[in-house]
Image 1 (spheres, rainbow, N blue to C red):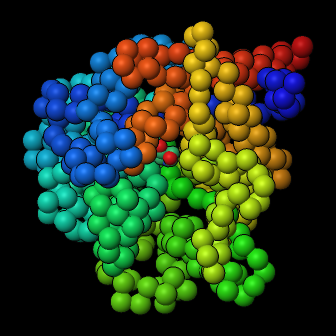
Image 2 (image 1 turned 45 degrees about the vertical axis):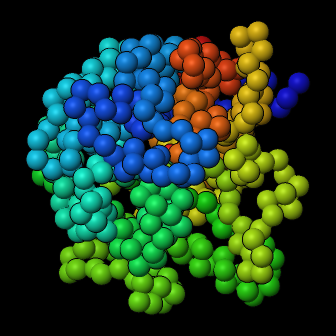
Length: 454
Ligand code: IFM
C-alpha cells in the first residue's frame, strides 16, 4: 500500500478552497487554421527543423476545439471547482491587431457558458505563449507596441467574457517566454539574445500592469492576477561560488518578477550582472507593474540546484525524477510558499500548475499511474503544510487535465491525469484522475459534515 492510497490524506482544506485542473490553448485545441484563426509563433516554431523532439505540431493536438463538450463533461465528472484554460490570441484576433474573429470568440463563449452550466468556475488566462505570428514580424514582445496590443486584447476579452469568468490571468510564466523563447531559444520564437530576452521580460511585466489598470477602469469583477513559474534555488554545496550562483539564479528566476510586482523595483544584483543587457525602462513602468493584484498563481514542479563548476546532475540527490528529468521535491513547494509569504506582501496564492510527466502504460483500458498520484498527493500535503504555517492559499490546480503537446518535447511527455490516444482521440481517465476525484469528494463530505455539525 502506498502512502497515498487513503484519499483524504488526513487533511481538511477550508470550504472555499478552489480545486481545479489546468490546460492551455495551443497544447490542446488543434484547429490551427480553422474558422479564421491566425498563426501563432508556436505554429511557426513547430515548422523549424528539429525544434520539436518528435517533429510534431499543434495542428490537431487533442482536438479540443471540436471535442470541448466531451472535455467539459470530463472536467465536471472529476468534481473540480475550477477549470484553468487559456485563450488563443490569434484565434480571437488573428493578426494581434485590427479585426476580431467572431468565430473564435464564439468558441470561448461556448466554453465559458459550458463550464458555468456544469457548475465549474472559469479561470481564464490571456497569454499562455501563443502570440500572433504577425506581431512577431514586428518584433514581438521585444517591441513596446505589443504591450499596447495586449492591453487591447485584454479589454476585448473582458468585453465578451468578463461578466462570466471567475478570474483573469494576464500571463502564464513570463520567465519561460522571455528566457526559453529569447535567451536559450529552445521555445518559440527561438531567439538567442540576452538583451532581447530581458526587454521581453520587462514588456511582459509592463503589459500585465497596464492590462490590470485598464481592466479595473472597465469595472472588471473577475479576480485579476499573474502566474509565475518559481522554485527555490539551492546551492549544490556551501562553496562561495555555488552560493553566488544560487543567489544570481534566484534573482533571475524569482526576484526579477516578484520584486517589481511587490516592491516596484528590479533586483540590483541582477541589473549589475546584466550590464548592457539590462532592459530599457521608461518613467512610470515600475509603478504600473506594481498595480495590486487579487491573486498570485505559482506553477511549481521541482526545485532548482545551482552549481558553479559543472551542470548539476539531478540524480545526485538520489531522489526520484519524473519523465522530464525533474527531481521530485514536494517540500520545495512548502519552502517556496513560505518564502513568498515572508518576503513579499502577497495577495492570496494559488498553485496554478503542479503535476508530473511519467511513462504511462495503458493495459486493458486502465492506466495505473501510481507515481503521478503520489506526486500530486505529496504536493497537496506540501500546500497544506504551508497553510498550517500561515500562508494564505486559495486554490490548487493539477497540470494537466489531458495529455497534450508538451512544447519542445512534442507529444512524447504525458502530464495528463486523463490519457489521450492521439490516433483515435479517445480519452481515458488514469488512476490519478480517479484518485483526485475521490479526494475531492472526500473533502466535500468532510466540509458538509463540519457545516451540519455531524
Ligand atoms: O506544459 C507546461 C505548461 O504549458 C506550462 N508550465 C509547465 C508545464 C509542464 O512543462
